[in-house]
Length: 293
Image 1: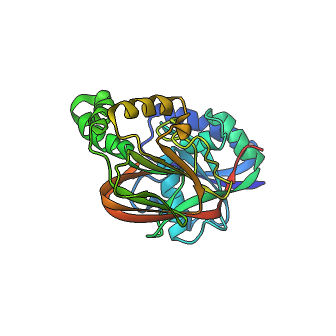
Image 2: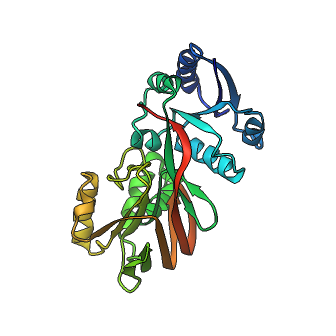
Image 3: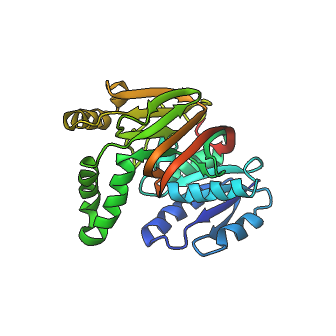
């Protein structure tokens, strides 16, 4: 019988616990299951120390998956770990990009079927991994501004942050994709996005053509800096047709370097910066993940 170690957030609410219980009932039909809550300091490392070769199942969202994968990478244990996912977050973009059902019982059935595939990762020049997406520019600033407004006005904070970011000055950044200079840093940019997965923020198709197991990074560089061009870019973005916008450069690559003025970035939803230079590269077949057949 298979053995599973399920990691869940200690702070999960009663609704999440009910969903998890139903998923666990499915898993226990074909495997020995231990559940560990990892919300406290040191709990994740303690759980990984006791994994003992078992399949690791993350019951949570993109943030929980990112933390687990990042820690496994730091411990140099990704190669010999099989990962499953029960999507219980607000965005669940990794699940969306990999066709994992958003219903946790159906996702548990996928885990129980144990169809394992190799999945790529993004890694920066500080050896930090990104599971889904990195973007710099208006999207990252909208999240940053929105977080500040959310403390004051609640859920409408992000739309206010997006409006504030929309009126920001263009970002003067030099972008090199493999050996090609796509942006020279002299002309303003609206956004740079590097996708391993297709969506961010719970389904926004920022890199709609990205495929986590195709061996390439999906890179979009948007130059839509004028007021009307920003509007048309936003409309195309909402309809996932912005890669064909006249102000967008689309590349497939194995390495991307961005440098220039100080800029914030969002990596798997976490805001970092400001930075003046960073490089990302593809890590081919870096994770062993249970996915739908």
